[in-house]
Amino acid sequence: MRGRAYRRAKRLMDLSLVVLGLPLILTVLALCWCAIKLESPLRPALFVQPRTGLRGKRFPMLKFRTMVPDAEEIKGDLLAYSKLRWPDFKMDNDPRVTRVGRILRTTSLDELPQIFNVVKGDMSLVGPRPTSFAADTYEPWQRPRLRVLPGLTGLWQISGRASLEFDERVRLDLAYIKVRSLSVDFQILARTFGAVLFRRGAS
Image 1: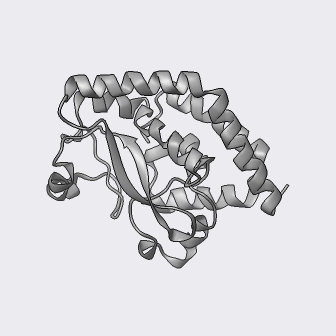
Image 2: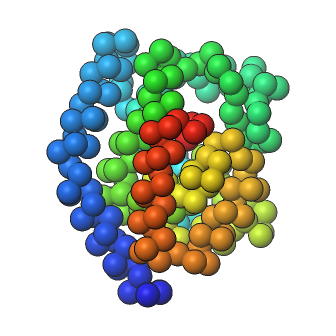
Image 3: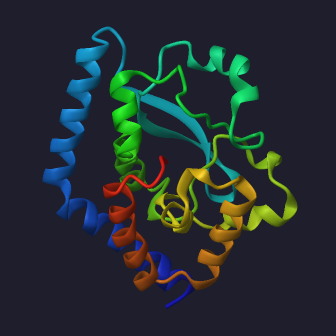
């Protein structure tokens, strides 16, 4: 199954799985929200960040807030400690991350609010992860990853997750795009649970 038929079937799969998992999803969302509010009662529990999606379109992606309020201002002072090349940024023991935020990141629960992005249609359950940097930052060979909806999880999450450089992640995304099917999507979803369960990196 390819083309429009695959896209329609995948959309149906996304919505069906979200509906089936809704009681558990809402329970976990509520627990995470309460934990964040207990630690920082005056700060919002959700964080909205512009991300790059299908055809390079920017959209507001939801995450649980895991950092201190002035995280973006502090980031400039920490660029030298990043494990990944610009425009990516990742460092061990990031001082901007809160105590609850560290738990949410380790378990990848900070990404769970993106379920609402999936329902809205900005994202799918499986696909290339949407980047925080815009499409004009991409090199020409990287742009084909923008031809499909970004995902809550993808091939690189189960292959190495956030420890991979962007070029490596793009190559895995392009490999996924070539072979994508409902069965491949189910396999990635199943393996994602294992990656999260055994905490192989952070997303």
